[in-house]
Amino acid sequence: MRHRLLITTSLIGICGFFINLSCCDDCPTCPGDIEPPPLGNYRIYVLDGWNGFMMSIDTPADTVVDSIRLDYNGYGIFATPDGEKLLVTKTGESSMSIYDASDLSYIGSSPRYGDYFFDGGDNYGICTSFPDEKTYFIDPVSLMPIDSIEQWGYYSFLDTVINVFFIAGESAFYRIDCVNHELIDSIRIPERSTSEIAYNRCTNDLYFFESDLYWSYFHQYSIDAGAIVQTTYITKGGGGIAISPDCSLLYITESGNGMLAYVPSGNIMVFNTKSHLMKLTIPNFNFTTQVWVAPFMGEIILTPDDRRAYIGAGVSSGGGVPLEIVDLQENEIIKTIDPYLGFDATSIVLAPVPNM
Image 1 (tube, one colour):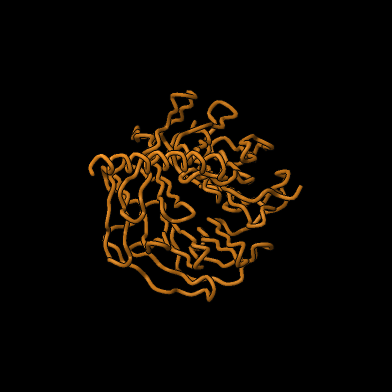
Image 2: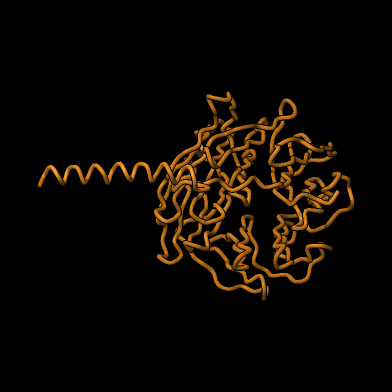
């Protein structure tokens, strides 16, 4: 009986092996052999605020297609949702310079100096204006204000799916209804945001940095639990935050402070958003390709196809940090764009390819 059972088991195993081979020969894809999404075509615009330089990069070729020199310094670059206009902070005059994205030609200016956010699907824009400390709702085409509210803060985040705008205030996060242009509520937290913030609508979590005299912290705050559920100690300074399109992964960078010699690890940290635990780290070097980038990283942008991450310089890098390109399938740096000595990717923005 035992001998028969062994023979039967062996036959089943052999049949299963050949069935699996047959599947791989005949089926378009074998089980577990999932093809990554195709690379999308976008534009990445980079501002070097230290040296007065702006460039346009085509993706996925990741090549510079245009560039101009600026006669001023700035800290931020923003793109309208149609991909046709760029707004750059003109620090000396506290105004915004406006450029045609197709050829980087200058087309005008705006007095509303600050950070800009756009929702192309619902056709609205938001400007957190620094001089008068107001938040304006603006027309995304004319860039003219439609309405304003008094809530304001240096760090903000727009969720274009639920149309809620988050502002980090002195002692709370404000939630703003982008449809009705009014305050929804405020979320009081035990710590104070001192750098970039982000919100995950799938887990109802807020993410933000906090610094004290000697250390910095990255907090994951559960709105449902009303508490910080995970804290990660980082080098003193801020960083960048990005959430994957399916909300499952959280990416953060450490900016450190190059001018005060606070040198961060250079790792891009990747967290599971459900467990709040670190899943992996992506180092700032690639032994195979010999690509290396200075560790003072800042803003991080993920492409909608979830194939690439583009990373700029930290706000206190001190200069000399190129644009870093990361393959999110392989989780490794594949390229840097560094057009001249001392180039610094101060601010970056992703936009549709403009009409030429």
